[in-house]
Length: 124
Length: 107
Image 1: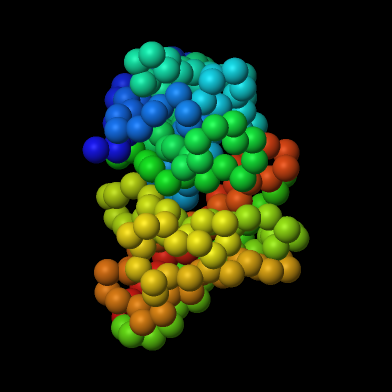
Image 2: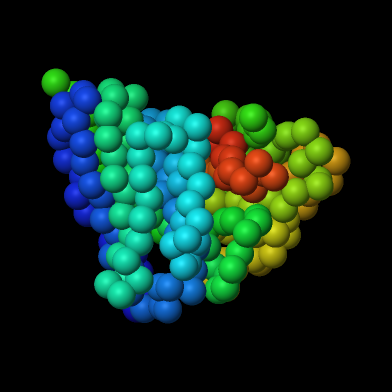
């Protein structure tokens, strides 16, 4: 079955760090660009970051650039998001999502598969 | 930065046609897609590349994109279509942009 499963969320204090993981299964993980998208409670979707299938190119939203780092381990079919200097406004459900097109996709990203999300709460 | 604007809410009667708009500067020059999100669930892609339906999405969902507006149309709306809908584009500054979302209520 094609699926994504996020883990690693939880309660963290402001200024703290957290590493999210996303386990992929059912497809050739290394062939697809992967992304992180978050949704604050009661709010809309916000794209955070994308990494190409090879892992050699990464892209970030201004809101997280310099604080968050996306990475992947294609040998383990895993996607990661290292989050540092967390703020209260980072409180959200974090989703990993897959672009549907295999190969080197440099434009027009969109997402055909989403995980169930993992909740990150930043609070003292 | 690029912005997409959606109406916060749209109401429709069962079996009628629902129209949800998404506005942005020269949006018609970009590919738009749409996601459906029901309470407590992850988003689901319902339209991509302006007007294509993924496998498994009912034919009553259709899309268009021209000028400054992309439109999601749901024909013969059913109660199960009640959800939040988000438009999304990729901007040339290499970022993904979502609209603010529209809550569709089926009265």
